[in-house]
Length: 315
Image 1 (cartoon, rainbow, N blue to C red):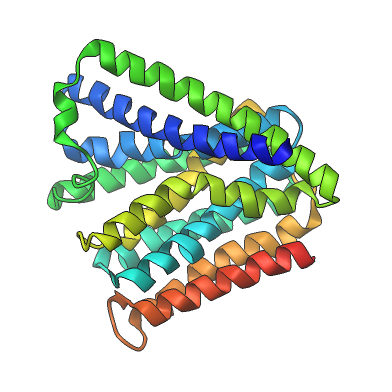
Image 2 (cartoon, rainbow, N blue to C red):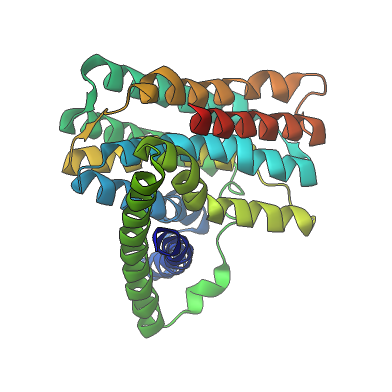
């Protein structure tokens, strides 16, 4: 039954995330927001909804390990699993924004998260507010930079949604919200039951199974785009997702319910894997071939992710 709950939870999160993105974009068009602004703000927040609902649900039920493990594991999966598989299918191009803007900010948020968690073994409401303030500042800088390059963030927004009726928009919003809530309930319940039955810690389940599940939308979109030989998925988009996971998801969750560090491995292993696999992107982006993440580099990232998953279960 635990496996069934987890599978159904994953499905509902994917469906709910898709409907929420569509309804959010349609509403934004009705508010006369530009495609660029929608792509950089509304879509980014909407695609983080599965992680937010799962982390919030887990924190409210007292399973802080799942809240932290979900985000840390998702960030590792976005680079090792999603970026690795996508690069093996179709090489990714590295743009200047990656190493000049997105990557440094991701590392800053990662170190700030580590400092907050290690200083008191809790992510407090005040620290959640600081993280949320940081994402607001990031968005302001992001939009200012995008105005100089209007194409950034526009490709992921479907202009056809501009003609969506109000009834359909509201219906999508209700379906998306209900599916995300139901999916997060089932996923957390199933994960806790499975961990208890198998004698595996909630932390391990969260940084592996749950993290992969909440990263499924990004993985599916990236693989489909690569198979269709469409415009290469930008490394900056996946890096941006990691920034949103830390600052907005953990920030909002901590404001509503402070997140406790219950597992020592979170600070001695998981978060260092998150920072390490992110840091390695810089030498990979420049060596041996500059501004390209090809198949061998993608295989290296995927192998690193496989090692992380193996060590998580062995530990």
